[in-house]
Length: 87
Length: 87
Image (cartoon, rainbow over all chains, first blue to last red; front, side):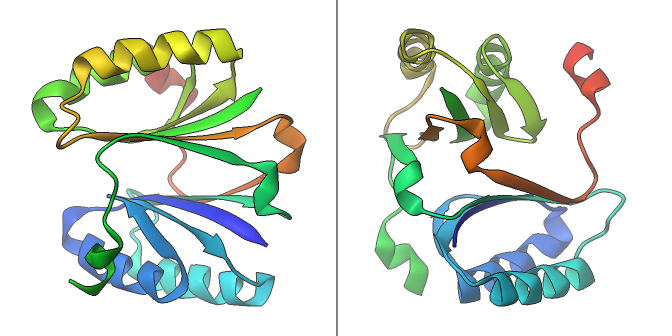
């Protein structure tokens, strides 16, 4: 399935979370990721994320769609360069 | 249509952008909004947003779906209290 993941994570924990999410999804904006992922892999990602998060303060929202084509994406302004994935 | 809007905006401009987006959509996380909006209203929102943004540094991504039911949403951690909309 296709997912969009957005997080709001305390500064101290955000580095770890970024690294984790990039193992599973494409990083498209500061705290936004997207990509194809299996339900099993998503569960795994969220389980690891839960270990990093302070559940009182942090949050993750995942939007799931069976098909990417059901969503149109429009970007305005600076696009995250794919190179960013390697920095 | 149903949209998810995420922004990454410089600190100096973020207050204005937050205020603008809240006029059109529901605020669900730090820089994430969702809601039903007509194509005309979305165009209007993005036109105002463009005036606020520094297009070299800031970005907005809008995911659009004809039907909200095509998307499932899963939230982990702290949910933004609806009261937050009035603060």
